[in-house]
Image (cartoon, rainbow, N blue to C red; front, top):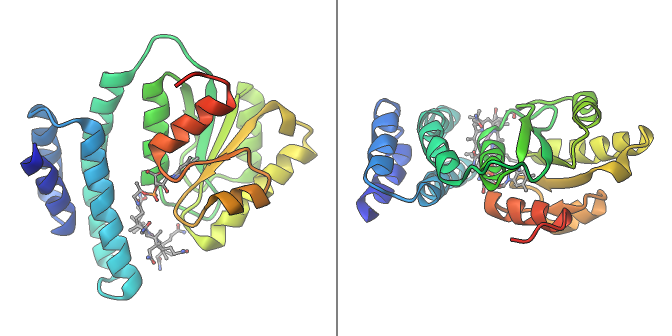
Length: 215
Ligand code: B12
């Protein structure tokens, strides 16, 4: 299993798009806990991101590493869903990455873990306009709105959506949870969110706590 975890990291760090599915499939088939597999992929893409941030890697490297994740993650996510899916829905969560932001991987993890925990998840995808978040919250009568932002420039979109909920008179109907690498508790408090999660598992815990569901 330690080998599988290392192979998952290596496939990202080597930008090995061709072997991504095979390595992920082997890890799952050999009994690796899919949550640990997801953590290994996340660790590796963070390393790539940090190296990009320092100027040691370039945008094409970032793109290739994220292509590896796009191939490996669905396999790992499927295994997480199979392991955890329950019959009864604990509540409805509308989720998406805010307008101007196309980062999908973290949002996808939160979405998968919420689904696996037993929530009905309406995933609006990436680059979601404020008005589309509001419409989905209303139409679906959602219990929770979860927003992801990965860029410092798009983090303020989360605030705009919360303001939109207030203007539409539906702020009290829905709990708002935010996350993404530039977000922290202080920022979440400052924009009037109900909760913040630094990781996907923490996001699930926060959603449960806000809805009064025992862990
Ligand atoms: C992969 C990646 C990309 C891929 C995205 C592919 C995809 N389909 O998602 C591509 C190559 C397309 C990309 C593009 C860009 N990127 Co980029 N990218 C990354 C990278 C390396 C990893 C992000 C990721 O997927 N991480 C893995 C996931 C699992 O982690 P995560 O997203 O943080 O999510 C976890 C938590 O934050 C949390 N979470 C996330 N969302 C939510 C939501 C809720 C509700 C909760 C509770 C929790 C939660 O749970 C997740 C799991 O634990 C980061 C580096 C980094 N350290 O984050 C840079 C990074 C985010 N990118 C960056 C930049 C600058 C860009 C570009 C502007 C580059 C460019 N010059 O074009 C563009 C932006 C395009 C746009 N308009 O959005 C910067 C942002 C800097 C900043 N602070 O603003 C970073 C930090 C890299 C860096 N160090 O400079 N990127």
